[in-house]
Amino acid sequence: MPTLYATSDLHVTHTGNEAHVDVIRPDTPEDWLLVAGDVGERLNTVVDTLAQLRRRFATVVWVPGNHELWTTAKDPDQASGRPRYDELVRRCREIGVLTPEDEFPVWPYADRPLTIAPLFVLYDYSWRTPSAQGASLAEALRQAREAGVVCTDEYLLGHEPYAGRAEWCEDRLTLSEKRLAEIPADHETVLLSHWPLHRHPTAPLYYPEFAMWCGTTRTEDWHLRFRARLAVYGHLHIPRTTYADGVRFEEVSLGYPREWRRRARGPVAFRQVLTSD
Image 1 (cartoon, rainbow, N blue to C red):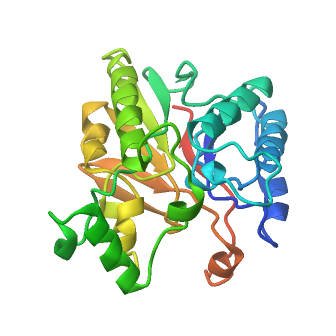
Image 2 (image 1 turned 180 degrees about the horizontal axis):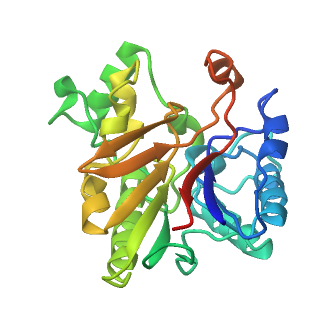
């Protein structure tokens, strides 16, 4: 019976991770794969990896993570900000991988209509520690630096043509809400995003200040408003299953070698998140 699988945070440019891509294979020709971002940093590497996966699975659905949006000195393609995202979408379409800009696909093996909704919403720095609540963004960033944690996005994730990442996030939220509202009311959904849509998965963060780069308060009720059967995400490198308001949240990241080597179960390159009803 067909299965819906998911993976994220493969970080294939890290020594020890690339080999795990070969493990990600379907059990049947009808299986689908959701990729919740952070395949890698270089455009060609991201697209080549997704092309490998597309050759194996009947359908591959991808959303960008922050690493795909980084503009690094080692990448021959120096596109930044929205032009970089647009180029990733264009190349994904060339290889038959679905993106947040394409028509939302419907998983055909459920007991009722089930729409897969790939979402690219970024973050707007609204997930704050108590001491940063109500403070300016500059002050919240100062506190994060003082705590010893600043996301690399501040140096590598461009936001052109927007004034900042929060403004880009606002644009993506407006677009995504509109598209989610257009899903037929009798459909349940699978919400696929890189950044978690609800804050509860950030509770175990060693540095709570890092939550600023993990999501937005604007999506906190989307799992209810848009009838989610489950929400799939990555980014935190804390793979686990949790629940909010009875809705299942699946963090499906592989993570860095230094992380999965410490886990008793070792590396888990992909996970089954839904089977045929």
